[in-house]
Structures are given as C-alpha cells and as structure tokens.
Image (cartoon, rainbow, N blue to C red):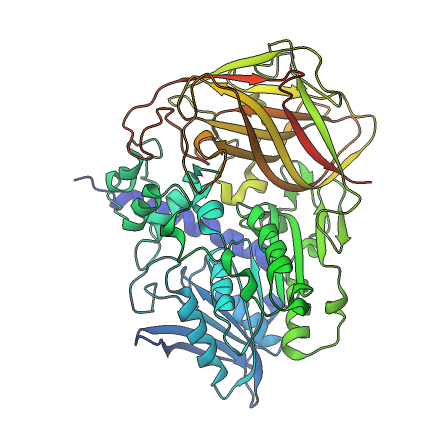
Length: 591
C-alpha cells in the first residue's frame, strides 16, 4: 500500500497558503466595511447551535447577529466546506451581515464537519433546507423574513430549499451554481467534467475536505480512478455508470421545479465560471415557467468577468484584459441592495433595476437590458474556410461572412494518448486568472485553426455562442471541441469561450447513440455565452479539435460501455466546410 501522508500534508499546506492569500485580496474588495467590523463588540456570535431535522439528524450552525434585543431579517448559508474553514470565510461574511443589521446563519450540511448524518451530495438538501428555514423562523431573534445566499454547492442548497417552498423563505441569491446537476455539473453535452467534478467527488467524500493531488486523470478504466488513488467514492462510480440523463438524476436535478419558484431571485454568475450556462438557463427557466406571473418578473441576472473563484475581483484582470474598477464588478453591493429591499423592506429602487446586467469584457462597461439576449442582437455566421490545410495556426484556415463556394474539408487524427490539454496554470475553477496564451495548443497538427481578417473597428458580442459543425469520424464514438479566441496584434491568443460535444450524445443528453463510422453528422457545439469586445486591430479565431483534457475526460473512441474501457484507439476526423456542408460559428453581435 502506498504511503500518501507526505503528499497530503504538502497539498494541504499549498491549499492553505493559496486561500489565505485569496482571503486577504478578497477582503480588500468585498465591501469597504468588511475588514473593519471583525472586532466590533456589537456583534454577537453563537457557535455550533444544534438544529434537528425531521428524521432526527442534528445539523450544526453558527449564528452572527447584532448584539442587541430585537428581531432581525436573516440570511442563511448551508454549505459542505466547513462553516469555520478559511476556504469560504464564513466568519468574515457573518460579521459583515451582522454589521449591516441582519442575522446570519452558516450551517454545515448533513454529514459534513460538525453536522451528523451521512454525506450524500445533493440528496438531502430539499428537506434539510426546508427544516432549517422553519427552525430559523421560530427563533426569537428572527423577524420572519429569511433569505439565502451561497455559491457553487451552497448555491445549489439555496435552490433546493426554494423548490421546497418553506413559508418564511422570502428571497434567495444563488451564484455560480446550477439546478441541472447532470448536464451542468457532472457532464457537459456528454463529456465528463474531469478536472472539476472528477476531483470534487473524492475530495468531498469524507467529513472534512481531502487533498486530491494523487488522482491520476489518465487512469483507465475511468470508473476505478478514485479506487486506484485509494480514495474510494461510491457516488463517483454512480456518476460514471450514468452518463445519460436517466432516472438516477431524477432526485437531484432541480430544473424540473422551475414552476415551484415563488420568490424573488438574484442570479449571479461569471463568463468564465464552469456553471455559466446553467446560471443563464435557471434565470430564463424561472422567468418562463414559474406559476406565479409576478415572480417571473422578479428574477435578476448579473454576470461579471469572473471564474468560479471570482479571481478577477481579486487580481484585476481576465487573462490579458485589465479590470480597473473592481468595486463596480463586485457583487457585494448588489447583494446588499437586494437583501435590504426584500428582507428589510427598504425602498431603494432595487425592484426597478434592469433584469439583466452583463459586463462586456474589453470595453469596461455593463450592458443593461430587460431581456437576454438583447432583442437587437444580430446573430452573424462566420463560415470556416480552407483549402484543406487548416491544421495549426500556420495553416490556411480562415473565417468568412460568405458561405463557402468550394467543396473542401480538413482532416486530423485525435489520439487519446496525446490529448489537447487545457491552457491554464492551475484549474478551471480559477480560469480567468490562470489562462495562458493559446498559441501553445494552436501549433498542434490535431487542432484546426480558422482565423478572420484584422478587424477595422471594434466588434462587440453579448449572448449565446454556438458552432455548427459538419463532421465524420472513423470511430463509433468521439468528441468535437470548439474554442473562440481573441488574437491580439502581437499574436497573443486569449480564450473567449469554449465548448464540447460527445458524438454519442449529439441528439440528446438523455440517450447515448453511437455514430456510424464514415457518416457525416451535423453537430452543435454549445460555447455557452459571453460578453466581449474584439478590438480594432485584433482577429477572431476559432479552434476545432477533439479533446480538452483534463477539463473533460478523454473519449477513448471505442464506443464501448462508458467508463469501462482499459484501452483507447485513435480517431481519424474529417471536418467539412463546403457549400453543401457549411461549418460555422454564430456570434451575437450587438450595436
């Protein structure tokens, strides 16, 4: 048996140093008042208060409130990462809200840290959320107006409580999260989200968070990856056994409950967040399906230049793009106005705010609208062109607003043993801070590169981005990836957005259907959305390939039962860009 004690300690030390640094930066911009209220005597703190669930399980919460008699509007956060751990800085946030006249409750979810019970991700959050809100409503310090906030998993716990409709839940502000767990957390259009959820699964499968440096993302068969690292995780195996959106996901996907939402919601997200698509989908889903028509109009969407860890608010940049006004992009001022209005009844005009606020990167401005995408959006097609030599940035791939006249195609070989790798120093969680020059992958022969002419004026886009791809493969299953890139005058290639489609899920994520080798299929690669300004003198570029490792798992190309392959094989890919089969990208151009 391997001895991992040294690497575990080393890994924890690296994590601790990173997040202590992150906390210092975060406190500089979270709100000008936050660092100053740490030691105020007017804040009362109660630690590890027990809250009994309907089945007798005891969950523990910390309570922060003004140290005076009275009833206070209350904000709840339910999280699996430790209510006193430095990673999520709950003590700082609790003191912040108490200093603003709220009570704040931070609770460890079932089976994590102080709370009892068994940890089963996503399974118990509806009932436990309902019971906790009801418990808070019965406390002498609670005014009866209760909101919830949280990001990622503890954004999901906001949604889980909301769909259960506890009577005293007044509003929620979930950020960087999703109600659709299958196709926005664990999988993305059929591809397994390896670097995020593949790691998170084993990392979380203990009462306290574990270091995952020893996971080998190349291990095959995929279903045994966690076992091989001596981090066994039963629900990880369940996820691998269920690549399609089947009955397994029925109890944890919440998007079928859009109709149940009966409260105002502030939806917060980031252009480089791994849950960007779902942030937009959930806003649109409640707006369309909520049974209460008044609630449909009380959904606000705000998307900033963030990744999952909000690093732009700390560092002041997104890749090469500098963000000067950090306070304007930070969500905390908006959160305060939202809760002041809906929990305190303050007439601050929040209810009159535009329903959509989207930051345009490269232009340093907020786009404000009642709709998304904008009604005046011009969805322009940019067709791929080539004489058959689009391989790498040194090839002849181009972009044209005119449908190709020539019957041409491009070919490359995808080898799972040598996949295209992510262009980031650390992880997808911190993508906007850690992204690097994409020319490091654009020199590869298995990456097709299509580059437009030098722009004579700025081109602003805001909205969904999609690629229509006509392609054939000699494999029974494979992947196709697409990446939108901004080429600077000096050649630096910055990521704008990227996407993937697994061929066997080209029709629907509900059913796996293999492809016929050699047959031409039409694929839609969803690049989600963006708000971006391509500046004069820059060039628009699109990359097409078949892997983005280890953001996603490697497709072994065999067509065998998913996750069970011990071997891989190469796939010969053919991309068509002809008059009959015109492949193109659609950009949402705004005035």
